[in-house]
Amino acid sequence: MSKETNPPASKLSPAQAAAIVDAPVGVVPDPDTPNLLGKGMSTSVGEHFQAYIQRLRGGEMGALPAVAGLVVLMVIFSFADSHFLTERNIANLLTQAAELVTLGMALVFVLLLGEIDLSAGVTFGVAMSVFVRLTQPDGFSWPVALLIALAIGFAIGFTIGFFVAKIGVPSFVVTLGLFLGLQGVILIIIGAGGSYRVIPPQILAIQNSNLPVWAGWALLAIVLLLLFGVAMWDRARRAASGAPNPPMVVTYLKLAGIAIIGAVMVIVLNADRGTKLKSLQGVPIVVPFILLIFLVGTFVLDRTRYGRYLYAIGGNAEAARRSGVNVTLVKWAAFCTCSVLAVIAGVFTVSRSGLADATLGRDIVLSGVAAAVVGGVSLFGGRGRLVHAVVGAFVIAVINNGLLLIHLPAGATLAASGAVLIIAATVDALSRRRAGVVG
Image 1 (tube, rainbow, N blue to C red):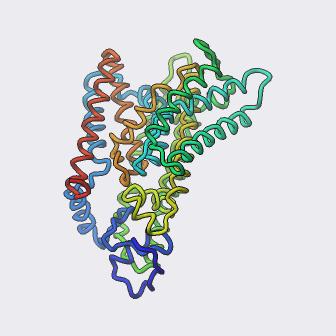
Image 2: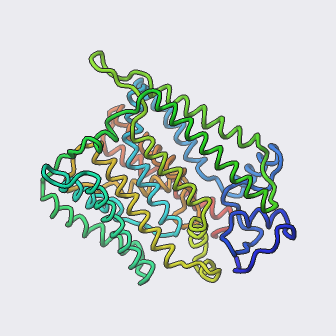
């Protein structure tokens, strides 16, 4: 990319116009620059399908291997245990995966840069330890304590960003040091062997209560309207730049697929999964929180200059710097974003368990990295989306949930998760080699 003034749209070829639609303001990208929105140049359904097949052959498989693995795992576990696909277990799966999904999405922001944050787990451990101490009887109100916890996450991310982006210390070293050091901070706050009960009912409700039955349908309608609105906005942007739009039927087919999957989930979760003594139905409250993070984060990565800069730096940091991108500031912001989102993952964790102890957040960070990589986010930087982390997190959650149901030991769960991670990393390396990125 080179920093120049964009030429008038009328003088651009369709390929140049399509690339500029998603490029940073004032930057004219190479016409061969991949379109991050994946809209391509197709004007018919057949061309759109052929372009997708061409991307697969070129090694751009995205989340397809993880989705295929998720389907296979669900089929296997549904035959292995009759309880796997019950309403109660599906609801449990959603709440069990909530913190891992959120942490995986948080880590995407730094993995896109080719960096890593090994301290994300203990970051939310420190923040949530402070939160539960502050919300004990005669303490702070929970909103104030939550703001303080988020501020702690931001401060830790700011510190990591300073050492990595400003000083130039490798992120692996900085975050490994914090991973060790912050465990000591948690011990000081909580006390060795101690634990504190989570008191605010609003926090406990996030993972342990459900939306009213009607609210599940309202949530699905709002999500579909938002997706339709963003799709129309994308088409308007491309049309204004002189770039061709894919046929509307492609947009309708995607929305129909999301609507069908969403409707099935709402029907399943609205079914009564309680006991004879107590009815239990509705979408878990944590679901709209995760959807909000996912939709906002995806919009930021796919449709803002900041998101474009993250991909540009991850693809080639020096080229991005020469194009006028403030690499230091973008990296700094990415680590702050990661740490703040990690604290939200911590909220979901203590909400589900109802406790905060000295081991809080110690073991989850590698699972978060694994979730992102298994879903299709590249450890080499420059490739990946939030949806990949979501799919990868559900792959790991299904493995844990399914093996627990069939009463396999914890060792088998860890071995299976590790094997899936190695397979995912191998697929990523092979796909990059096929695409000519490496090798």
